[in-house]
Image (cartoon, rainbow, N blue to C red; front, top):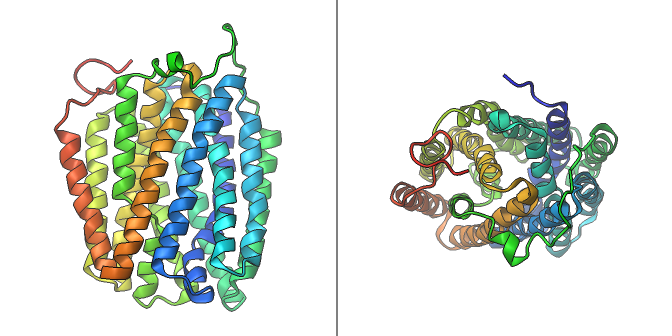
Amino acid sequence: MNPMPAGVWILGLVSLLMDISSEMIHSLLPMFMVTTLGASALVVGLVEGLAESTALIVKIFSGALSDYLGKRKELAVFGYALGALTKPLFAMAPTAGVVLAARLLDRVGKGVRGAPRDAMVADLTPPQIRGAAFGLRQSLDTVGAFLGPLLAVGLMLLWSNDFRSVFAVAAIPGLAAVALLAWGLREPAHRQTDPRTNPIRRENLRRLSGAYWWVVGVGAVFTLARFSEAFLVLRAQQGGVPMALVPLVMVTMNVIYALAAYPFGKLSDRMSHRKLLALGLVVLMAADLVLAFNDHWTIVLVGVALWGVHMGITQGLLATMVAEVAPADLRGTAFGFFNLVSGCAVLLASVVAGVLWDRLGASVTFYAGASFCAIALAALTRPIIPSSPHDPGKPVR
């Protein structure tokens, strides 16, 4: 068994620190917008959808640039630094418009760093343990995603629901992430044997196989079926959970996510990717149905826990599948296009969820999510699906 490269651990710890910073804000932001700034659920959905889709769309340009330059670390450092420096804007925001601007800048930073970071994980890792490597990075990332809300809960209780002070403190772990990446990681050398060409030229894009574009389509379907997690926070608040304790909903989801990501990542190195994808959709459908059934806090926590299991099954798996079917010199571009399509899907899903929430209620929103899961599951099992190395049939590479 190959040992896990030290660089993967460093990238995971960097993700952990940045997620602490981000989730200290994101676990409170929907409540801050609704209770302090007077925003509607539609506005929350629009802000979240625009922010997340911006991050995913920007990844195509950063990924292609990292392929062209043959250097990924500098772009990742810039992206993490931009994310860290936007955190104080949330503390000063007087309107939802300023929150949107801060979220967009923050997500631009995420978009800049995301594809180069994922490509570095693939560059650092031998194929035999690539699923485990993506699972480990995702697991460490998610540890930060539950430590952040825990810190937010503690500070909200300590400072009597002072959103703005919590937002200001969130900049500290973000800056620590930038420092660790800048001085702690040595990027693997890239051998440049051919003249540099634009990675998104037609002749290069033709090298992205049908198996790759199938993975892109699957990622979009999963994103449509899973709208913004801001609606999990609003569902918990709707059920009467005290404001300072609502971030514990995200703690629950991310604890489960963190515990599931690495084991399912290792499992993806040994078994059918198609079966794991189908399992992820079934679990997400169950989460939606539970959340639609009742808003009592015990029911909400069950639904949120199932949501976390779904994330653990699918997120590292989709990244592994992209890395497997993309040429090594186009990995950044491949992750970029994958996230471009997913970005359009997340915007659509979040806006639709916000409209349904405002006009028909929370239950209808989650029932709609479950219905889309059922449609996606049917579509997943019907077409001829490109094989992974663990599926019967012709290999993808």
